[in-house]
Image (cartoon, rainbow, N blue to C red; front, side, top):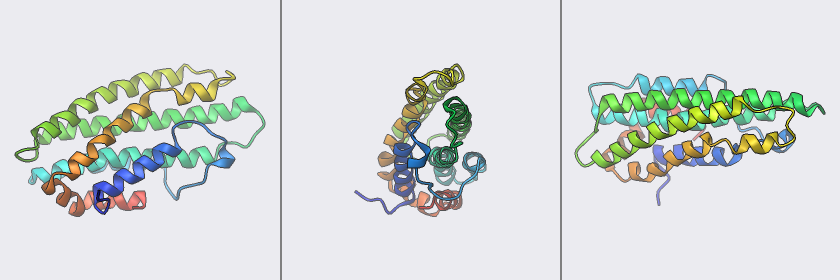
Length: 213
């Protein structure tokens, strides 16, 4: 199995960050993962929206990089904010900060995924033989966007004073649904033209740099 490509590096980073950000933990036990900002997720979204229209393969992979990169960058920013949660003994206050960070994460993912869904739909099938792959990703994106919306509502209804707050946040289905999209990474890597384009497309390279891959 190869992990030397842009898609491989993006997926490895996304999976690793997903494992670190699946739910609230003790901030003191969570190591920081580098520099990021609240605009990191939006940056990936902009990468997808700005994909060139003259080259369908390049446009498609840059939209896909925006999708996977938005996921990884969003989780990276969330992890860093989680590390910086107030070290107060007031559990409710810390839960409020956790709630704000998680809500921002889900909102950012929803924005990025909707942007990617629109851009991939606009570009269409990138090349002959990729019809099934393209259709699968569009279908899953639509489903995940709906699940992220539900997760956002679930999180908004949580009570920071609830003794089971941490468990309730970890059970919000948005992140688990979003991570399901990563399963298509191997299929994307399996198409030589897409794999090659992801290694050279400027925005894919830039997103990989932002992630630290």
